[in-house]
Length: 393
Image (cartoon, rainbow, N blue to C red; front, side, top):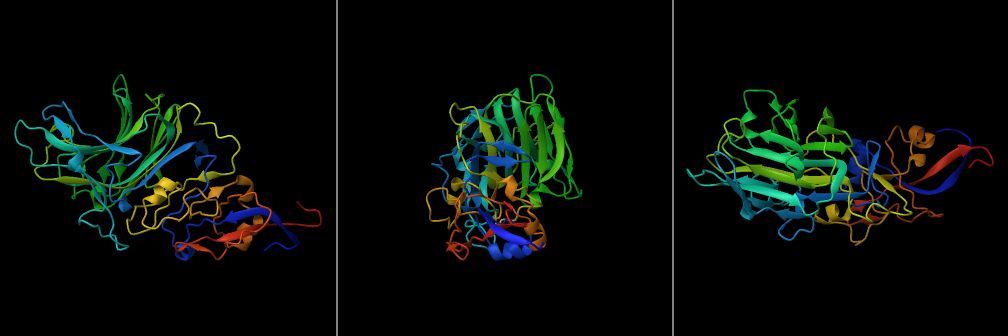
């Protein structure tokens, strides 16, 4: 630790670390932080968020953020119907990763099979109720199926020529191959802008985070936090909604099928951080904190902890903090940050390289919560020390 005199900065700092030692100390499910100034992703700040922890919900029929589609869609050679019965909750029943109803945990989007000749395929779709979602970072943890004959999608949608897609085709997940393709698509007035990188895993063998960051003139695509592709032609410019669906139209050049038995796409979570077109929403006035959104690193394991930054995400979990409002003393291993409090030499040298993020509460005194557990969620608090001689600020 540097030598010299020290004095307290009148700020409370919460450590955030991805190291295994700190993870075992914190052992957090999810708690929410004060993010009134927005959410920071790769240097961009977004004003709004929708988070859903589908591993810990028992009912989605009256959800405030999501609505289940229930309507037909004319397609060739098979039309299909989105039906409410095909969106099924299957929460975890404990810490082992097993589900309450058996099978893959999370929100299940089911394509029913078999389909009789001349009948509609029975499919599944879930959409946000908001239609004002604009530039932002959109991500979902999904386990697809290898049963051939379906397409599983996470996409942003305004209309047929303003659309951002992440799509996987179940018949392309071949056990004989060590890789599997993912389809990144921008639907435009002309030919679609389409990239098909190879994934180094089978999407049917585990949950992975599929993500796109949409900004003016560019959509950047990620899988498990790794940047794979940028598309810059036909980028949408208007607001819309976020949709998850699972379907088949029997097209031999796309979905193939329809499937001969029920096929399940399981969703562990959705996280969306975005700007909005709604008047009056973007103005925040004076605020204290911008929350750093942590990148996923590797596959998503349902039995491990997942970080949420909003109350709505935390309330899906079995034991959320008891406070009913956003509280700056409640943080998780992804914390709010003020850039001036990060990378301080005391933190860098005195904490053996622990990655630190910070939230400033503006208080002149130390908060008495260093040893306080909130529903078994431990909050670690330190005070930043500044080095220097007399008169140092």
